[in-house]
Image (cartoon, rainbow, N blue to C red):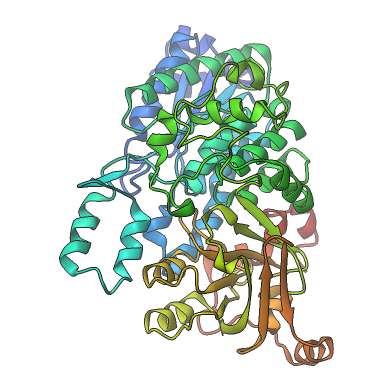
Length: 564
C-alpha cells in the first residue's frame, strides 16, 4: 500500500502517532487509507448537502474494508459570481481545486481517493487532479437540483434571469419566479455546465451509472455514494488507476454523449484539460467530426426552448439510456473500461429510453447532428464553439454589422439600455483566459438579450465563454483571443461579420490590407483591466494560462524559464 510509507516500520512511529491523534485504532491503521476529496460548504447551493454525501461515501469505504479520511476543497457558484468581477475567479478556481486535491493525496500518501464535486469547475478540477496521479480514484457528484414549480410551469435559474430583463414581466411576477425557481440543494436543474460534466463522467468511465442524473434529494444519491466508496476499494485492490480508464476511447465516448445530449460549451474547455493530464490532445477537428456523425437525442433546458430538466432525463433512463440508444448506431466504443469493473457496454446493456420525448432513439433524433459545433474562419482561425442545440434557426446563417465592446460590463450596459439593434453582431472581447483574466461566462448578456426577445435576432461573439444555461446565437472561445492579438482584437464597429453553422464558418469581412494596418496600430492592452490591473491569483493566472483551444490549462513546460 502507498500508505505504508507513513505507517510501517519503527521509523514511522511519529507518523503513526499523528494518525492515532485522528482517533484511528490499530485495525483502521492496517487498512488502505482512502481520501474523500469533498467540496462541501454553506455558500454554494450545489454543495450545501455534500457533507451528507461525503459521509455516505465514507460508509461505503468502511463497509468494503478501507479507512476513509475526508477533506474538502473550495467551490465557486457561477450563478452568484455572474455579471461582476467575481466571475473572473471561476475558471482559475479549477486549477486551484486540482492542485489542492493533488497536494492532499500526495502529501499524505493515500492509497485511493473518491472525489465528491458538484458544480461547474470542481468536477473538471478534481478529474484533472486524479488523472495526473497514479492513485486509484473514482467520482460521485452531489446530483442535480429539482426544477422549480409555479403552477404548471417548470422553472430554473435561467428563466428568472431572462424574466428580469423582460419589461413585460411585473415585479410581482418576477418575485414569484425568483421564490420558486431554485427549490433546494443540488446543481442547477438544467443541462448546464455542472450537469453536463456530471453526465460525461459516466461516459468517461470515471463514475458509476446514474451519477449524472440522480437528483440531489433522491435517497438513491446516498446509495450511489456508498456504492462508489465500495468501488474505490475494488480499484485499490486491483491497482486500477485513472490512466487505465481515461484512454482515447473514453474521451471519444464522452464527446459522443456530449453531442447526443447537447451539453454545455464549457465541456470543450474541460475535456481537453482532463485529456492533457494523461498526455492526450483533443483536436477540435475531431470534435466536430464526432458532432457531425452523432445524433442529438435530448433537448434538456435551455436547449430548443425545452422545459425538460434533469429529473426528466433521469426518469427517462438517464445517461445509460442515452448510451444504450447510441450503441444502436455504433457511436460508442463499448469495450472501454470503467471504474465499475465492467466495460461501458456491460454498464449500459439493455438500457433504452423510457420516455421518447425526453430521450429519442437514434433512428428518430431531434437532429442528425450533435448539439455542439466548432466554427472556424478569419475571425476564429484556431476555432470557436457554439451550442447549436440551443440556437434558433434565424441566426444559423447571418451576416451583420459588428457592435464592439472591450469588456462584459460595457456590453451589458448598452444591451440593458436598449442600444442593440436586430441583426447586429455583438462582439465582447478581452474576456479570454488571459485577457479577462479568467474567461468569464457571458450569461448575463445572453440572458438579457433573450429576455428582451432578441435571442433569434442578435448574434453574440466572444473570446470569453458561456454558461451551460445560455441559449440563442452565442459563439464563444474565439481563438486566438484578443489579448493574444487574435483577429477579434482588430474588429471595429460596423465591420461585417458572418456566421454559417452548416459550413462551420465564422468570418470577418475586412480587407487583408486594412487588417494589417490595424494590427500595426494595435497595442496589446486589455480594455477589460486597463484601469484595474489584476492582482493576486488573477495576476499569476494571466501569466501562466494557455489558449481556450487547448482547454485553458497551465503548462509548466511553457514556463520552465520562469515565464521570461
